[in-house]
Image (cartoon, rainbow, N blue to C red):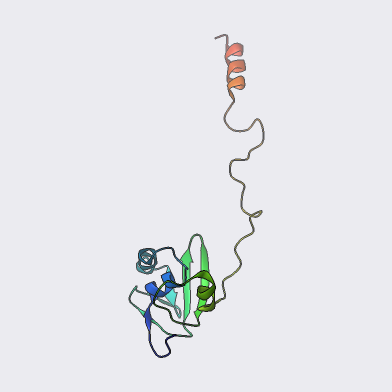
Length: 123
């Protein structure tokens, strides 16, 4: 699309679908979660082709190299062609601790356990 032009970093992050909204991209920039070529980026900082963008979002770090500048939000196939993804792979689902699973008998007593304890106490 554009050759010598530049685009705002928050707008580009939103356009290539790294964040859901442009305001989320701007907030990430203000919070220091976005780095361009190793430097903290403000929302209005300009990008050019070849820049490396690091974004900490949704519990993982995305490392992308800008291939093409876009100003408006594009579809996923076009967005994938706008950057080269150098991000580490996401952690495996098995590696994450399973939530809500515990061994039987550990933790809070069940209603049956409470009734048995009350009988032992003589209530």
